[in-house]
Length: 183
Image (cartoon, rainbow, N blue to C red; front, side, top):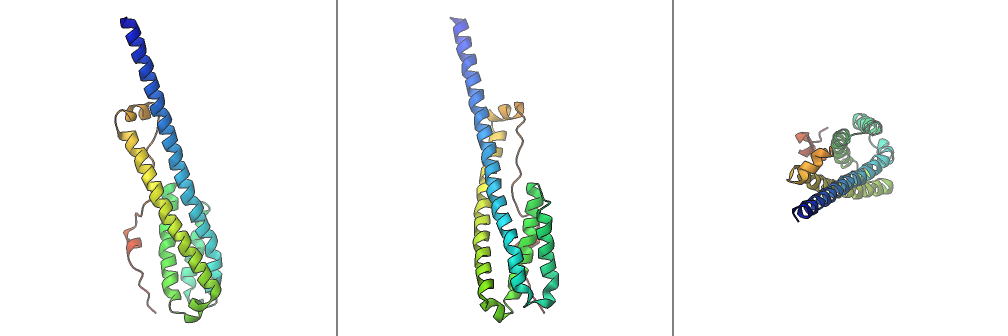
């Protein structure tokens, strides 16, 4: 009788480990999917930039520095592979786009240009999608990381080499400041 109880307990333990493992795999894939959603929206934003820059170029000949910075960031995007690299580029681009939009306020003809208005609206929609995707990604990563640290799933996670995921966050506090435009 004691042998049967031991076998049942071992079977239950194995089933529990399998369930935890499968749960960790599912959560890891949710993290990858959430990152993919951010990546799609960030790529969409980077794809909108050449059109925005072209719309603005004719009005802002003396703002070449900002236009060049935006173009350079777009080029760097293609080489970024990690969450940290893309997060840094995203933060730098956000700062450049804030400057670009603030400067555009000083050009009434540009503000009234239909192409510019459509691009600005498209960019705003994309920014909202990015914001939502970042929140979703960070929520998913946080849940996954908690599972990696909480008992007893941390034991299964360490046995099968699951690693913590990185949050998508603003590391440069200057990004949070308002843009100051002066001529």
